[in-house]
Image (cartoon, rainbow, N blue to C red; front, side, top):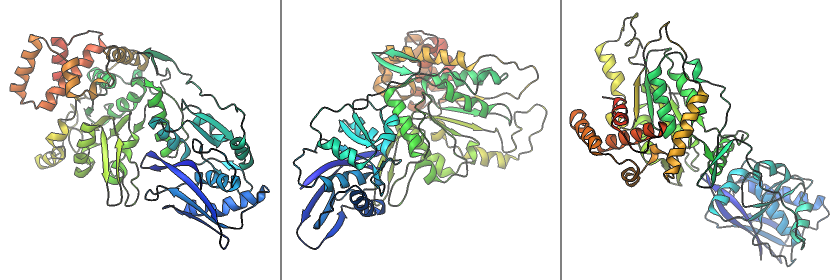
Length: 501
């Protein structure tokens, strides 16, 4: 029995698959076993045609291909190349155990890519279980961004077989570095951009809201903007994406993987994701799901980026309450009878809402026409446990003719990078918004005056333990923006001013 390695996706993580082949005596037949889907079953015809078209003899025996482990569902046409290579090599004594082969075969023996290749190989690389791989040549531009793997690009089945049989050292594709501005922290490069298609300079007035947006971006703190229609809530939310902290190599590759899973061509740009589902979206589309295969949803696609809910109270109660867990744990678990999958979901939650159903409660010129019952129903859609997970709450003022532009996105992004450097120089592996309880004690210590302020706030506002933790994290970020080592009284007071009461 000969075997070679391939892989399949389980959720968004890849699992190694051993492609095993035997040719035994009996009536000529060709079968593929191992819980395979239709795309793999159909590969029998593609493999047979590719071999015969390239002058390879199809053995007149009983051929069996097994994809192990047999209790793991496999899908994708990228198994074609591995299956064809095993059959073509036959009894040749070639060591194949350390090779991974990926590629879909054309009927003439050409090797092409499919959409699953990048997320599969990236996941294998993150697990450290792949060292060299034969892939379609057209995929090299994307795959060469993944470090520490020797990629060999081929265009035909014949080229792949010659490469496997070669005993000489063959040059492989070199890893290509990202060509973006970068800065080193702890000898690790972090990349950022200098292009701002949506600029904060377009927003006139709303200085309090823009200050909250800066703090939110610098520490990845959840933000809720409440204001009248047209006050600039969505404008601020959409511009946040361009001032978020820099990304390291691994995070950029993860962002590219999510783009591919969504069906987009990966950009490999240091720009974090921005997901904005409509309030009519189903719970399955937002959190992911499926009866047989758990598909990733908007929450998972927002990993390392922004999840923006516009018209927050119009989302269903079930969606809002289910969102509490990923907001706290930074991951989401999908449990079905046939599958259980956990996705990373470390996102910045940003929401916008009107102050009342008609939207005119804060207006100085238009009277609110909502009844007390309508107001009560509108606000009751947001539970206290949900609001407790919001770090920054801002009431936006109605627009005025005297409002002026102030800060640009470039100026904000510079402040965010300054705060980011402060956090990394302290040795933090995560941003302030994701600090654990133990890290909170280490990095967010208070002096006697600060302790007194917190004690007074707990008594006056009945703050929960979670609320106190989030206030300390926000205060830590405000100090970082100002490049101050310890949290001061004014930082705590500003952080307290952003709590919803």
